[in-house]
Image (cartoon, rainbow, N blue to C red; front, side, top):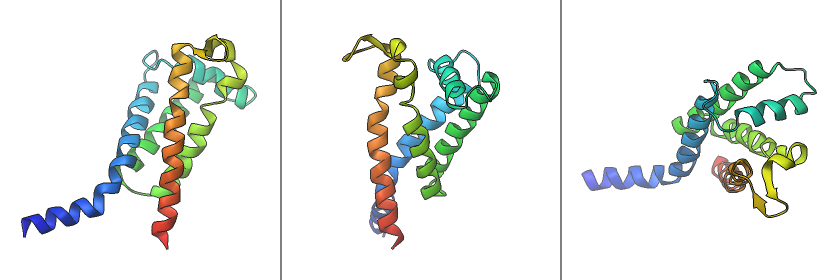
Length: 145
């Protein structure tokens, strides 16, 4: 009987490991932004949000808003609740993480076009997360029907 219960649980939850792991990354990186100076991307995030909002949001408010957004995505993905809205929020977020390439390319490339700085590498790894989020969203639509 125990094997049946474990087998059922595994079958039902095997797919959840992927959103769970992305949720951990979101929660971790988001939580860092609540504490000034802990996130390696804090200054770049503030500058990028300033550009995207045309300076309408104060920097200290924008970083807390970003921290809340990332943390919320992380909690929703970890808890496996509101999956579709969480994935859509994450897709919007992860897409916007590439905007520094437009605004601050000098800070992201040691030598363009291939030699990224550490900050550039920090951003480019989001290509993986973007791909996984797209797959998860597609799969969530399939499970809906």
